[in-house]
Amino acid sequence: MDEKVSLSADAPAPPRRRGRPPTLDRARIIATGIEMTLPAVTFAGLAKQLGVTQAALYKHVDGLGELRTLIAEQIFLDWSIPDPHPTLPIHEYLLDFALSIRLLAHHHPGITPFLTRRTDTTATMVAKIGAHHHRVAAVYDLDPATARTLLSGIAFAAVALADTVYASYGWEKRPSSARADLPDDDIETDLRWTVKALVVGSLHVAGLDVDPGPRWRRT
Image (tube, rainbow, N blue to C red; front, side, top):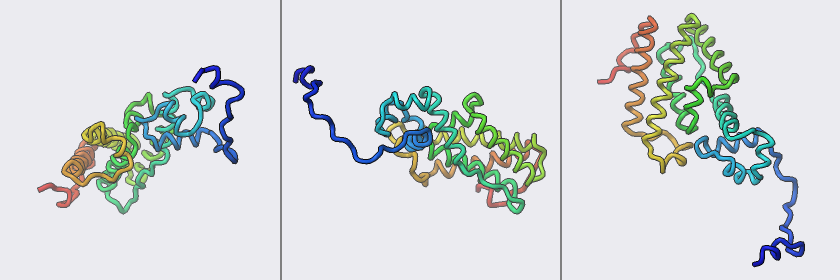
């Protein structure tokens, strides 16, 4: 068909949708980006998912870098960090904390750089981390520096382990693995034992030797 004919005023107009379209705001943009997962987010893909133009997205975010940062920040803020309790031994709490990070990384591919690179961590994320450090220090009667060293070191190692395991899935499986349950295989078993060793070793280095008991020993 001639281009002039196809664009003429006589061409039928597309049918109008009834009702108001959903409001486009940052909250909706971020929620859709979370569902897409960080590695899959592009401006074109997100605009298509939302049913808007890329120009409409630029009215709310400056670019892909800011978009991914906003998505990562919301993922982190939505994460429920395990709450420490005096009746729970510190080694058990640190294990729960590390495995919670492992789940966070599994369910939200692409989040790990935002958990390890200080240049990618937002002020809001830093505030949540600091509040958690103070809470753990108060519950387990630790000085703030010790709590910060323990939690930061364990978090960094847990993120690295989670990223390594995720990489083992293979590129073709990664998008579908974002909301999947953890696989019940040798890798997960080995990861859990590795995290236990990490916790005991971290406590020892911090001068907080604990005896976790036979349940923590691998025979």
